[in-house]
Image: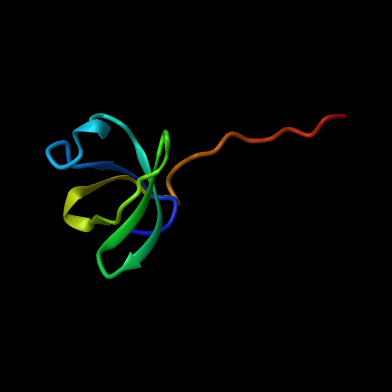
Length: 69
């Protein structure tokens, strides 16, 4: 995993985030990640075993910005 990857958190360990997409922000220790939720940063490190990768930062499409003429 890497920064900006979209993930889901384990529903057993983190039921408050059930069905919610989160974003990886940084690896703070080996296999320990800082995660951004819809309400802001999760206050503790989350272990890799509690994270499911949903989309890689390279595969997520962002909308194009059109130039104003």
